[in-house]
Image 1 (cartoon, rainbow, N blue to C red):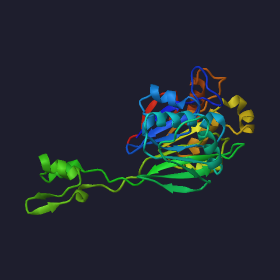
Image 2 (image 1 turned 90 degrees about the vertical axis):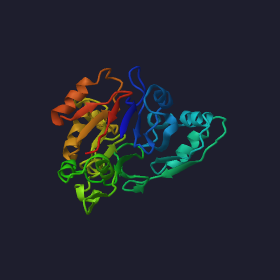
Image 3 (image 1 turned 60 degrees about the vertical axis):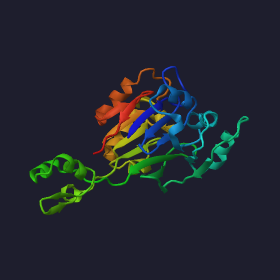
Image 4 (image 1 turned 30 degrees about the horizontal axis):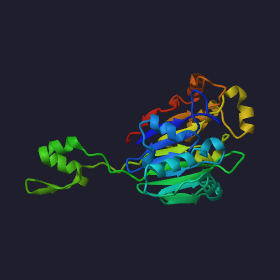
Length: 300
């Protein structure tokens, strides 16, 4: 899995940062979380391809999280896309997305399905599932958790060598095929450990500190949480449905996640290192995301 931060700005883009958008390459398909203004141009500067986007998950319909949709869809049309596109969002998704996609004159060449979602809903997809939770923001907003199904246990190479297995037989077992060892048939399952949990990625969207998101993020591989401000003005941020870097780190610690990425930085912060430092006091595996940053999420 590869995560690409296309935009990490809060409320409006700046010289340093584009509006909110995060691409996740699951190997099977590319998933996009939010699609702020300028997302398609950020794709051109990144390692990800906008034509591979199969699903888009919008957290809410403030402009900095969805105004990139019309341009992105129209560019897909101009590049002769034929694959369907599924767009998910809060309960008002159908009305909001349809309005956005009917801006301007163009010919729709591929099918688009819009899926309104409610908090505490689960969607089963190809190789992973999406779970939703309520986020604390002035407009209908949902957070997302993408989680893979269980993975096959690790292959015990040391035990295989002790049994005299080598060469092509070794490779066949690694691929899950049985091999003959003398008069015995050895199956791949004989040399595998217990199933491993799949990876899980949680994206908060815009929110003040929220117990629903803490539960959604419980023991996640990676949490992406908004950190609009530093702690000195967090009370003001909370009034507008936002969190400080300190509060994001506290939630990550309480939820026992493995890694925290901060995003959605206010334009008052040209440099985000102070926010990263603030978060690391409470949760050392914290990192401030930056536009066009790639992050590999490896198997446990």
